[in-house]
Length: 421
Ligand code: UD1
Image (cartoon, rainbow, N blue to C red; front, side):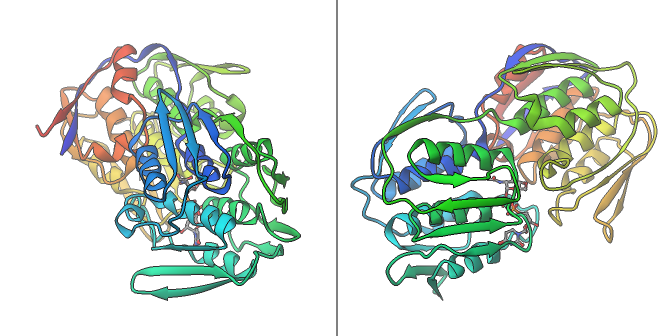
């Protein structure tokens, strides 16, 4: 087991470059399955989730060459259409590989995905959409077998909820469809726009990404291409919050402020001084943060992935805050650990919300990540706490943050990653 050991009470101050986006990297890596020509991606973060995804691609028969952030994949020889159960369970986003395999080969076998334990996370919308595209689905012995008789047939798919994964899966599955697929109530997240841009660079015809109506006109083939993926907006948000919680000052380069408007609005609202350029964000924390009320919503609303992070920050704010989680049912486990560190938090399970009371003094303690963003929230709490904080199960955090320890150290934190403690 790995733990972060943090000596707290250090201001975060300095300039840092953000990494490539985890949530964009995973579906973009899946495009390499769809495209038999070699593709090269830049800015892919070196994190556990991308390593597992690339491992699956190799097992499926793809040739993968990794060279510090540049990844070249050739799926010409790919012959395996089954995603092994053990790897599928490791992370949720493996499910988008299914849409890519299905799009390319008209058949795919996979199991129910795993990933962070933040809620039920079903894939019913994905499977329903595959069915609408003419795919027959059979569930047998832990595996889901999908097969189209001949081709996937473009159709109109209205999602009951703007699911990010389902929108990505439908796009991937429809790239070679016969005719046109329309996704209504599509997710509008920037990662979906990034996926569409990447596919279009390969010759696909995906229109409207970033709006709630996406149209995919089927093409016969894709061509060789390279693509640089977007910056990780959640990492940017997390680093901004590391300065907010420690009364520090940070400039993040490589950041796209347009992807974080709601988060920046809330940070401003609680008293932070924010300035932006086209590709950087600077935050200066006030002496005293103010409490606020936040609700998570699909993009462009406040992102659920930032909810635990802002939750940690609001523990240090003056006055009461209420955080309501509307996307996942089980995303407040970190708050129990914040209580262990001295935060005064009241849980309202019926409303899926917490109330954070006033300005809390946080005291270092041994706490444990229960999921990726919850773990990162505890690291931030540790930075601002007095004494030593040990965040156990750091493996969760390593799944999604590239070089977090080094980045925070450069910014003045006293943090190290240790095997056991
Ligand atoms: C993606 C992100 C994750 C982020 C989430 C919401 C990746 C790798 N992960 O996850 O970081 O927290 O978007 O912004 O990009 N749902 C169903 N049935 C389905 C699919 C989803 O009921 O078939 C529900 C989920 O249980 C959840 C909600 O829809 O309550 C949102 O899920 P979704 O947008 O699909 O999230 P992910 O794609 O899993």
